[in-house]
Image (tube, rainbow, N blue to C red; front, side, top):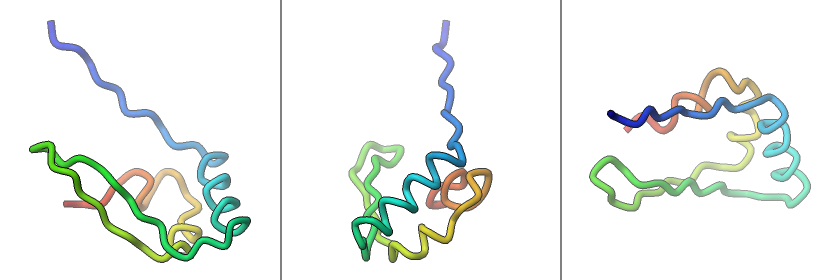
Length: 68
């Protein structure tokens, strides 16, 4: 029997927390690191203010990922 994988939902509180950390620590760049499907380590960076603008957890990078 195959094991079912569930993807956790991102909450407004989590998104708000990320925005607060960006402001509190005066972050300039956010670097996203992940493994792609073949298992290779990948990353990309965006300006922190771009991520801070993403306030809706049901759209954008919070649900669509990076689109590779």
